[in-house]
Image (tube, rainbow, N blue to C red; front, side, top):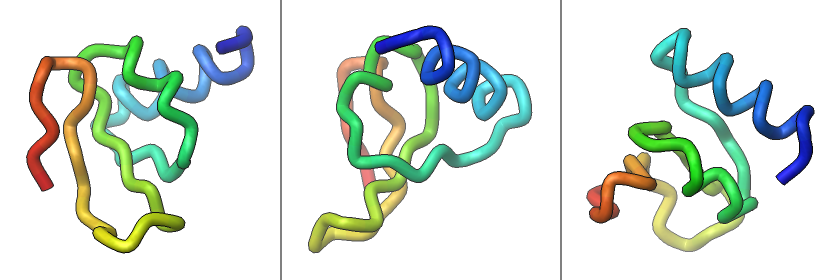
Length: 54
């Protein structure tokens, strides 16, 4: 994960927004809400806290 990805993730986290990506590298940012629109299960998951709950 490079600096632009880190800044995008931090901005989404600070704004309490959902980041839409298929990049699992964002799991390094705790409590970041991520949606993967390319997967079959299009739910929101909070990743990085040890549990993925749609």
